[in-house]
Length: 75
Figure: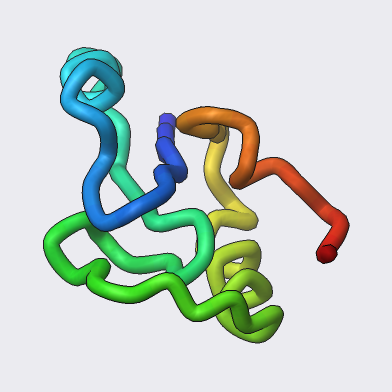
């Protein structure tokens, strides 16, 4: 089973990281689609979010840290 936790910011929140590690999640930035140690910027580009969506399309369980990663509208 593949479990992914999408997170905001540069790193998952420490409490969320503990939960994710206990559940054996792979952590992926909700916008850039990269692992925590690779995340350095927040681009706001639609193409980056599309790339993330494609990279997590085949996961069995998707956990979102907070609610911003699940937003579908743009302001």
